[in-house]
Length: 352
Image (tube, rainbow, N blue to C red; front, side, top):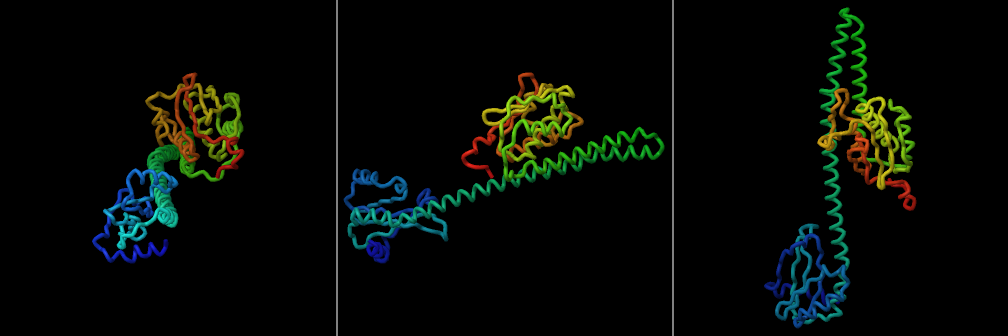
């Protein structure tokens, strides 16, 4: 069969008028494999025969009968890119037998595998390019957020502190120093939030099982929330970065305190595919629920507007979704979905 194919290609210049070049729709994603037929092949017989061919190869067969001329199709490249197919006619007008046809198909099977690798490689390249562009856009957004914090949010308390220090130096009393201290506390909070925000959107590396009750207790210890105000309905192990998950709870607890006051009650519990955190404070108006995760958005004049942006960034970095809704008490409820539970990985090992 190999000698027969050599004759087809070597003798092609004997009848150059029969050499056709055509671009086939979708050929850029398919490698064409030869499926020669006979001049008397009927469409019914061809339809029956094609059903006998393994399904993965069906898309690679091209059969063209031009009068009594046998036509063989070959791939057409521009460099390494497949742009179409070209036809080489059988100048000897000999009939290729059906067994030879199947031999030719499987002999050229490697071409199909190569084309499949090209398609997959191109798809992965496009996906990586899209992921890179999305990551670059997120980074640019964070840079804009940092510029806003530095130029506005940090400058305001700094100006206040400078003005009050001048008044204190001029002998107008030391009561202005308490305002300076408050301004410094404000700047410290802003700097801490900015650093958390910068890290929140970074890709999560190694994760480990983290108990819901444990991380909630750790977050309470780092905030002003009373331990007695926290209720954990049920414990469950989440697959997460412990430090960044703790930051999520810390910011949600601070948010509850900012809006619900010292007497606010907080509940934490598992969902079928994640977990929730809710409080019994005043809640979030429906028209604001889509905006609260935006950096800088806050209806609390003393808030930085970065806490919930940090929560959203950490969730996104883990591949989770987070949604703000209403608790049964009317307070704010945050639901985290698409969370991997540690028990789901018991047979496949930890996720990297």
